[in-house]
Length: 184
Image 1: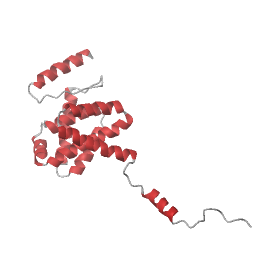
Image 2 (image 1 turned 135 degrees about the vertical axis):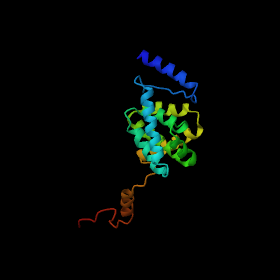
Image 3 (image 1 turned 120 degrees about the vertical axis):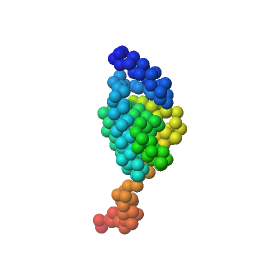
Image 4 (image 1 turned 180 degrees about the vertical axis):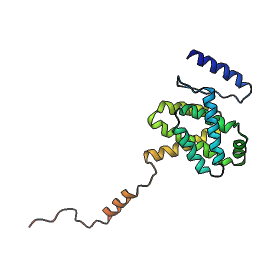
């Protein structure tokens, strides 16, 4: 474990010279390796390219990818890298040509964080810390928006329940007397 930490520190310091600095808090002792993060980043960039013409589809794809990942913390790290510093020219072009696409991807990450938070709040907190460490106010705001929207859907706030409305309507039109008729 110490060897992995030292390797990650040396790698992180070495890459920091060539890449945009990114401080990423990692709560898990089983942090993703550089190769695993690169693989996840490539997959996320492929989702961006595949859904470049449909913001809602990208939002859903990112949510599903991150929420169903074996390593959601690593997926969040890879996601931040994929949208702030994409490696693939196709992903760079897709994000540059559609500002709404980036915001949709951010909301997808926020929704995934909300879903993960139901089962594992510590992992969700760590993922949120990754987002905040990016120092990108648009990323932070859009992730928060996606998180709030998904949280409302999970808790049922603001969701119309037509079946309960039908019961309320039926009760309002009820002609049954309040007290039963006397048996006499």
